[in-house]
Amino acid sequence: MRTLVWLFALAACGSPRPGGAPAGGDAARSDGAGGAGDAAPQGTYVFDPAVTKVVVEIDYETGEAPYTGTVVGFGDTFDLTVNNLDRLFASKKALTVPRTLAAMEDVGVISDEELTTTDILALAAAHRQQHDTADTKTYYVIFVSGHYADANGPNSQVLGVEVGMTGIVAIFKDVIKTTEGGAVPNISRYVEQSTLTHELAHGIGLVDNGVPMVADHKDAPHGAHCTNSHCIMYWANEGTSGAVSFATQNITGGNTILFDAACLADVDAKN
Image 1 (spheres, one colour):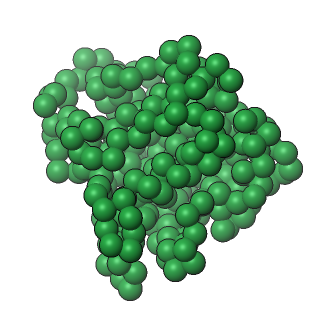
Image 2: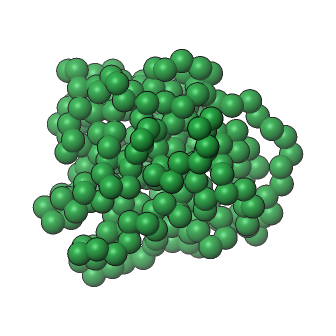
């Protein structure tokens, strides 16, 4: 087990984005609102034909691990994310996504319960092991306790953030846990996986955040989000109440692909 060590502080990656208020969780991402977070995507561009492999690295704070394992009526917990990533790449990339805690890493206790963009970048700098190569695009995900914090303070509705097209994602387990219970069994697992899918999709470049649109479906007031409320990229589907509603609709409807036709058309044009 590695222990978190704060070696340095990084400048903030960007200012809060429209998608983070009041219910959203993409506050650190480049959504066209200005700031240093609007820099070009870092590293290998994932739709380059030379990129044949996509690797998702997952770490977690002690006691804040993602849900894993097979559940009756649900399947393997990570099937949802893997199937949706595979669809985004039209099954043309070899995907490596850890499904068990043994394939992930416990990074120890993180004392800070109000994590800013700077804090998330520092966590990645301290613990990330996988990096882009000529044929491989990598993404880093860390599951943490506490809440995302911006200039307005901590936000108890933010499920996850992707930091400015860096491929760095933080999932806030305390917020995920608030979606437990209710009439739908295992709904918090679905919310967690749909949040992970949403944030990774932002890192990949949806919606009009690196991947051009075939037809206009960008919800401009909310940044890089889809106008379709039935798509995982709709802005309200990343907040707690919206995520629960979205999860309930998709679980009861048996839907496994969370993107709408417009988002899929965009990536199909790149594949």
